[in-house]
Image 1: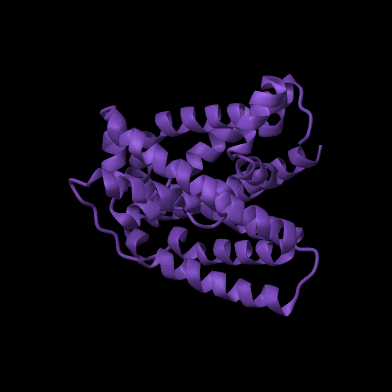
Image 2 (image 1 turned 90 degrees about the vertical axis):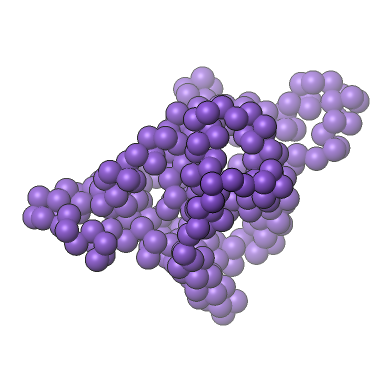
Length: 286
């Protein structure tokens, strides 16, 4: 776990804000943003360390030792950023997608193109197994993105728990949007309405499901990072490539919006998204 000063924690908070914004938007993964801002592996490892043994650490060696092993400062600041961002941005994201879909998806397309380049650089050595999982994950991501969506007015709490488990597992995978999974499951609009109306029982059950999904899936990812790092990144590369189809802005559904001005703005936003990633990369290395 790296040491951080006050400025580092301020930066980490805003990275959490960016992850929360991404998780609120059905189309881009918070895991993608975590990868771009250079905290992905630390996040997976920190979540993967959450277990019962930590409480014996608290009992035997005190709070300071427990908090250090938990990487508590990192998780607390990041969760604050993500939580504040999700609560404040979830309604804004729905309005942006409804009113400016061409521009929203154009910006995210730039992020995704740059993410492909970033992940590719992280693969130190290619193997036949890596290529196999690359192709498999491209097809899997494309398949998930091709589902039609069904929204339901009333959803049971058990289904909300299930949705939280599945969506949170997707949220930490670059290329698979947790919000998109909620849309596919038909729970996205219902959850947004629950957050707007502060329906605490629904929010609590969803958060409980999300915690279960995060704690379980992060351990799987941690194992693969420790033992099959290049193949894991090859798989993530495929997931991101496969997600392009879902956010591609210049399709028939937006044909009526593609005036010369809108096309210029759209392409400019794609370039902006791409350039922003390189600024984040530069900041990550400094």
